[in-house]
Each structure stands twice: as structure tokens, then as C-alpha cells.
Image (cartoon, rainbow, N blue to C red; front, side, top):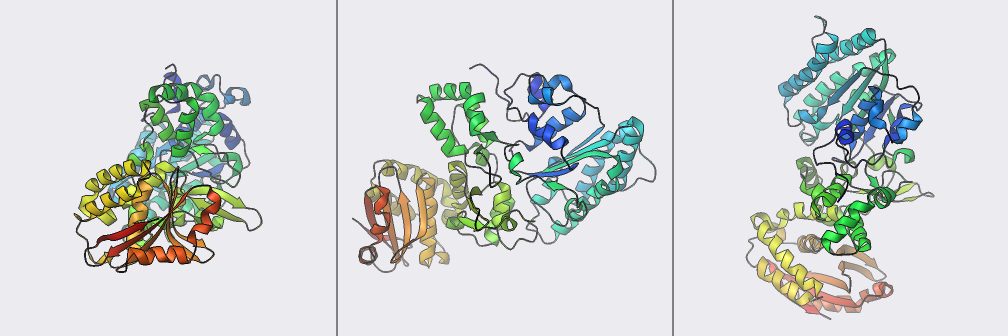
Length: 517
């Protein structure tokens, strides 16, 4: 195959370079960051999006490791290569920690640098020890200090929905970060990465000179892989994947784009691919849900429940930047968390209205989200439901909606339900989840000139209009589609329109009957 692809666990710039792994050159971004107007920066990106590798690259740069940058943009941009003392804190190791464990973890991180620069007896608390470290590193080296904090919010993410624990852990972290402002004369550069924004942490409430570069167009491609980078730097790997899959290069590119592309982090952003999924697909020769499969954060599912977000409500937002690039600990909407975690992304920008359009980025995220929400409808029968959905996919490939619905009815007949099935919306959302898992385009409550269609499903060959009823009849549902001429709304799609009326029974808690035209 040629070049070595970086392993899943390699997030260290030095190791990547020394092992001669494929590296997409982001060092021009590093140069622009470190030679800009602000010496304090914050970057928010979803998990496994290359933040740690970026921090590691900054560490190697500030340590003056010129030999590692041979052949990269930085080699020609940087002329001085000044060596600075670097304090690098990876907060991902402090996940799932209580108060005592969090303090112990912070002390452990400080101790490794105190072995180099010493510790004063008066430095007791973590914030005092950090302040003392920065000052001694400056005094002992004669150089300003660089502080790099990766995943600064990791200790807080899993308790975001906990009213009791969040304030306690937040106070610990706020105190730890507080010296960054007081030590300004001793600092050359401070960089923090994370997923979310917590307004009550000192980095945002006290460091009023911190520059949030998360949505700046010039840094939109600082993490992730652009379409141009994929086509030019990774063509060999894509060609090899196409060969292994037995399809053409163009077909492989289309599949990679559908699954992993679609991220935008500013109103003027190139297409960004999820780097974790893309590299895993190329490494394993398998276009699968690598990023979503690596772990759905428990806080996300909990927050979706807390805000009573229906599956069909995820995405399709028009929002001002303040609505989604906002602190998350006192959210009145799920949108900031969905955006900052990477489950929705920028899909467009209206210059006149100054509004962003936000939606699910790609097929991997859509299917992953729906798979995570399926247990809300099938409970302990989810694994059997996944098998049924896979078989339904076979029917849909043949445009046999009748066979797919028969299979669904047979399966639902084995699933016991509770009282939450007693309204039409439950069935609408369940079908939305199931058809989304088939990989088809599906939408609910689609407006037409004469009303709203319950659900629209588009496959490669046909467009299906669904009208759903509860304790009425499939004929009644079909009459509504016909009377209101719902199919006129979709005449310009160029696809044959199939009308489907479905009636659910309140008594059997299943599909009662259906009509297809």
C-alpha cells in the first residue's frame, strides 16, 4: 500500500514523524497561531478530531524540535526556533473523577514538572502550585513559558447534567486555571482545547484577552481533513481502498464523502472530513461508523432526554451564532451541545439575515444518532430490531415497501409497549428512526401548499409520501394524501411518487393496516 497510516492511538507529533506515518501538514496554521496578535487562544472541536495532535505539534514547535518539521511548511516559515519551557496538561485523564480524585490528578500532573523546576513549601493548592511552576520555569530558563491544556473540559462533560456535582468540579477547575491571568508577564503562549464552553470557568470569565479561534475562517481547517487534502495528499490510500472494495476510485470518493464529510466550522469553511473515521476507513478497508462507534457520550443521550428532543428534531436549525456557539452549563436549548460535540454542523450562512443553517453533517452521524435513540422505542429488543432493519433494507433496495412494512409489523408484534405509544407522534418518530437507519433521506412534518405530510422518504429510485393515523384506517390516511394533493409538492424531484397510508392500533400497539398507491 505504501505509506504507513497513523494508528488509532497515535496523537503525538514526534511519534508520527519518527515512524514516517502519513501526516497532513497543519504547521502553517501553527505558525499563524503563534505569530498572531493574541498569545491566549481557545479551540473547540468535537472529540477525536485532531486536537491532541495539534497540541502535540505546538509542544514540539515551542521546544525547538526543528528536525521534526523537515519538509513541512513550518521549516520555511520559522527562522528563529526559540526554545521555551512547555507545561503540557492533558485533562482527558481526569474523566469520570469525583472531587478528591480530580484534585489528586491535578497534583500528579503538577508533580511531573515540579521535579524539573522545584516547588515552594507555601505552594499547597493546585492553583498555587501552577502559579509557582510558571514563575520558576521562567526564572530558571530566562524564557517565557508556554502552557498547553488539552481537553480542558474533560472532567466536566460527564457531570454536565448533574446539578450537584457540576458546580463542585467546575470550581476546582476554575481555581486551577486562575493563575493564567496573574502570570501574564511570564507567559509566551497559552492554548486550550475542548469540546464545550463553560462560561463560569476562569478562562472565559477572567481571561478577557483569550481569542476563541473556533469559528474564525482562517482556522476552519486547522483540524480534520479537507476535500483538497484528501484528493491530493491521500489519493494513493483512497485508490488502494477502492481496489479492496472492488469499486472505482470515484465511487469510493463518493462513499467517503457521504459518510465522513460535511463538517464546517465557520461561515466560510472548506468541506471537512472527520479525520478519525477517514483514517480508520483507510486503515481497515471498511467504510463504517468508526467515530460514532468509538463511543457515544453518555451526557449527550442524557441531555437529549432532558430537553425532550425528538429524533426528527436533531438538525434543520436556523440560528444566530450566539445560539450554538454558547456556554453549555446553563443551556436552554440542546443546540450548543449538539454543535460543539459534532452532531450538527454549519451547512449554510445567510449574509442578509446573519443566520446559520445547522444540520447533521453526514451519514455516519445520522445513522449513529438514530441507532443510539432506537432503544427508546424498542427497549431490550433493540438487537433484534437492528436485524429486522437490516432485512428491511433488502426490501427497500428492491423498492418493495409492502415487504418492508410486513416485516416491520411482524417484528413489532413481538415487542411489548408501554403507555407512551398512545399518540400518533410516537409512531411517527419510531418510523423516522427506523427509516433513517436504512440510510435513506427521511423528513417529517413536511410543509405543502395544503398542509403537512407526516413523513417523506426518498430512496435512489422513488419518493414515498407517508400519512399516519392512529385508531382510524389506512384508507382514511390515503384519502388525506389524495384530497390535499400532497404529491404535487414533490413533482419536480423527478422521482416516481408512491403514496402510503398507514394506520396504527391503540389496542395492539402495532401497524393495523396500510394502503399503497
